[in-house]
Image 1 (cartoon, rainbow, N blue to C red):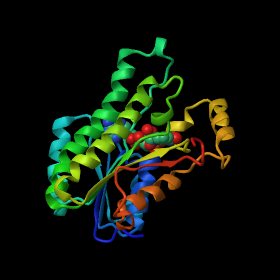
Image 2 (tube, helix red, strand yellow):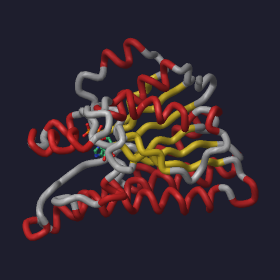
Image 3 (cartoon, helix red, strand yellow):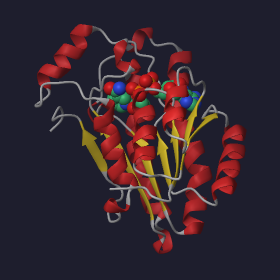
Amino acid sequence: MNLKGKACVVTGGARGIGRKIVETFAEAGAKAVYAIDMGFDGFEEVTAKYPAVKPFVLNVTDSAAVREAAAKIWEAEGGVDVLVNNAGITRDNLIHKMSDEDWAAVLNVNLTGVFYMGREFGPRMIERNAGSIINMASIVGITGNVGQSNYAATKGGVISMTKGWAKEFARKGAQVRVNAIAPGFIRTPMTEKMPEKVLDAMVSKTLLARMGEAEDIADAALFLASDRSSFVTAHVLSVDGGLVI
Ligand SMILES: NC(=O)c1ccc[n+]([C@@H]2O[C@H](COP(=O)([O-])OP(=O)(O)OC[C@H]3O[C@@H](n4cnc5c(N)ncnc54)[C@H](O)[C@@H]3O)[C@@H](O)[C@H]2O)c1
């Protein structure tokens, strides 16, 4: 599997799953991998190792900035082949303690940010008749979860938006594919803040009896980004070690 000659954009690319996707795409020969994020602490080792990686400061909730960034990147690369909507946040709490701010913040990044990015890149890909969009959902978008009303709602929304885009972006035969990945529990800075007993409980329910690693998700993203998945669209690929069956 390779991404030779392809230009890629990965949101939330500075750390965790996104950073691993950026590295994996660069290793697979992508000509450019734009790592979009709000800050790039400790990212120098990535750019030093992979000259194709381009850090790009952008808040995906800023509609005007997304519009400008998409035009700039598209123009610079003469088109974008792969978009990974990976940026996401959690603000967990039981519903009676969940503030309006925590609800809105998660909706904004995880759902509206994905919409803004897709609204810019999707139509351009249709016009160019090529593209693969990968949206990062979560198994909790399928199952729901205690204390994650906001997060689970966004991930369920991402799954239905993925299916809607797969239909809309392939109209008139355009070869634009849209898929989602639904990770289980993956070891990243996001899950570091979760209580140990919650993580242990998840691992005990996982067939493969471990947490996932960022590369487990990055390898799935590489498949969906590459031409090896050229007949795969509107699919939600669970990468969860058998947590949800
Ligand atoms: N870690 C898991 O177990 C897990 C499980 C299921 C789904 N996911 C999803 O995978 C994705 C990546 O998760 P992760 O664990 O690597 O998280 P993370 O917190 O380690 O990384 C997320 C990145 O997104 C960036 N980001 C946040 N808001 C942004 C914004 N407005 N604009 C641009 N960038 C922004 C952050 O700065 C950060 O670098 C998320 O969508 C998350 O919901 C993670």
